Image (tube, rainbow, N blue to C red; front, side):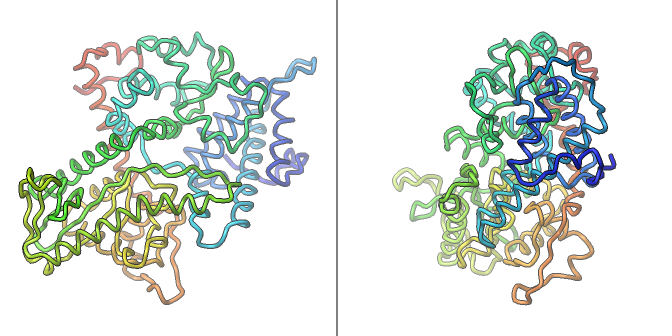
Length: 520
């Protein structure tokens, strides 16, 4: 769609700051039935997903969140029958509201935060960017968190994935009555109460305003919003982020075990299971999650799954909260890696045990001549932690700046692309070298890796003290699209076969309900 920001029909709004934008939007949308709003909003949301290069003045996340806010405005009957909207014009109006709001919100935050602050970077991720997770990534996460979802929702998100994907997949306008919604999930076995747990009930506001800054917390664990017996559902699978963030709020022991097990499988598939050593305790009873022993290289891996603090832009202590969480998660993991390196270099042989209890432990690993090997230190995270993972060497203490911090799904894509251990060691060595002059605009590890494998990299690697920097754009992450498609298909086929094997559904039922022919 050709978005013309000087379009004459938009001039009448006289848009200035955030509050002015929201006031004018409210006046505009209160005159419009919610059914019509949903059609306009979701039409643009779908178009933005497919045309992100042409429509980059506004993020998908801002469109989704503003659509939820604008849908909350009541319908005001002025006594006249509402005339059907011109969809093309109304999409341009929604785009103008959204892009202007995003610009105003971002500038307001940037002007009041210090350059180089943690909150400056984290705010952009929290407010504007969705994580670089594919449908296959989310489906894998829902499988890993299956028991957690049963406790928190009283049903399996994983088993009901296809029904959830169906109602967010762009096949409807996103405005459904109760009867239509129940029909779409008729074979899922979900009752109305279970279904309603996936929606925020607007009636709970009790005449309070639905504020933009509250959407993150109100929509935690939700796919959409319930209005009496009607439902609004943004038509994009990126709203799965709300579900995952809710599941990841479970107790720490669950999160840690899930991440460590996923990382162990990933590394075992790539490096070979015989090279992977898990849950290692040194003679001082300090644990190291994973140690990978290669011919001339040792990889020290620490997994961290802590949740980061939500960003409240007007909070006076947000920088302090972010720093404290960073220190207790990423910095602590980096410190553990450094401790393990010191132990391996300072002890010949360096012995590791299967327990931190001296009387009950057995030796499981012995590293000889560790000081003669290259040691690479990696902290693996469950997610990007508000954009602080890719750029964490800007905030780590000096002694730990040569630790690579990466989220598990970016790491999975990188391993797939590289395909060989030697190439991975080359990239990991670069990421552990504390080069701070190459940065992803979106703070995405996929962009950082995309620049590394591009022809540009070898010709232009600015040194830290030369006052020259590279800010790589999102196009450097395009290499990951092929893998995301492969993983989407792989996880989906696994899901179908798993459901059929469990007796949750039949091949014939899947073909009938979703027009899909399973590959058995």
